Length: 153
Image (cartoon, rainbow, N blue to C red; front, side, top):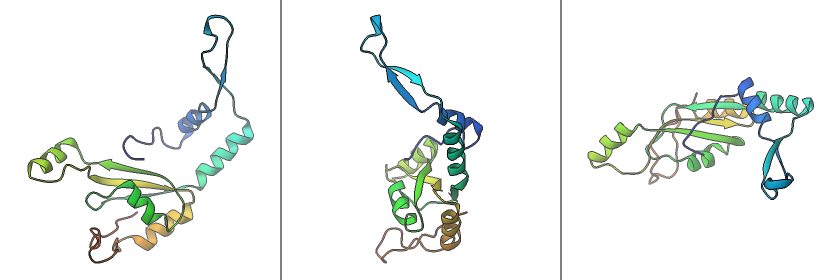
């Protein structure tokens, strides 16, 4: 996905938010008959521990510079060869930068400046950073991104 953010991060606040995501719908008697009412179901300690364990295995890489008009799907396809990707977050350029670029005759497409990619496994994230940092994005010589370099930390 792109736009928005990851919210509170991966700390205890995120865990509490994840605990609230489990919902059950129940019908009530009387005037509310037929309406869905959310009832929160508490998670067991076993599921909470499993969630924490899964979160601790994940790895995040930082893309400090993205080639012009690089899209999340392109990042998924290129970095997906290194390991399983969970989430991709790209920060778009500011409205002032975009307006200036368009006034100067540039494209109206969304341009992203930096991004974060979350892998399901830390080892895959580390491998991606080591293998691809300061290497050509590649592709055929006529490819739009042929001469751009990865900048991954």
